[in-house]
Length: 270
Ligand code: HPA
Image (cartoon, rainbow, N blue to C red; front, side, top):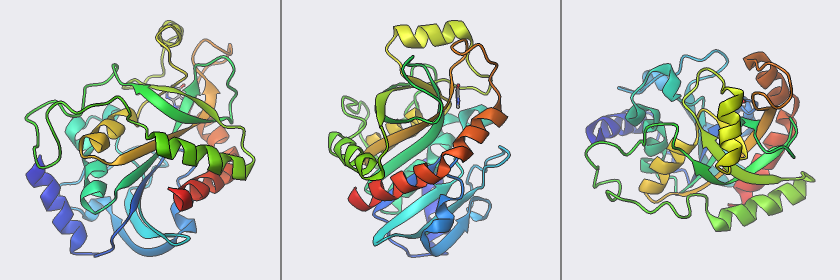
């Protein structure tokens, strides 16, 4: 696994020597955020030796290196999902690669279903913690000592400092920020109403198919992590409506302007 990472790193470094301070993973609704940064270099996933390439429609696959205002960032435009069939170690490989490229902080974004009854589609939720019991842990397998320790602490996955930064950024944008716990399932089917009732019972506020595994891999290697969910729908059984990818994308697109503004305000402060 570490050898594969080194191969990917070499492949990227053959194309750019850009030194990012922060990493960004773009979820639904933010796909074109990278177009608004001052781009210095682009590296297509397909051009990185050994890199897992995303198959989801509407998900681009490339790293964008550039500046958000004056902050040097590496942006993952399109992530890799476990439901695509990759090993969990491949799902988090891009996250680890961003760390190896020099990013010290990581902002994770996603689209998620609202589990908390007070949430509404179009809301933004700052992730305060996660429950990743629905997916295999990305650290399973021989521990890579070069990256981090065998049994890393996860009592503060989402940095308290960065949470304050996000609250300030949301205030600046006039966004009524929600806060809560993100629950990750594998997908690709949406959850059943019974699974959503379980999420409520165990303390979840939003549900999705990414992010928590990336946060674990990032914390393992000591990155400072934060995350935002765009609530695109009420989770299964909560609204009487069926779920569809189209609806998720429509809502994500509708609030993408606000989402992009929020991300910029976070990045300049983080
Ligand atoms: N469930 C899982 N993933 C999601 C959802 C959902 O309701 N909405 C957007 N991503």
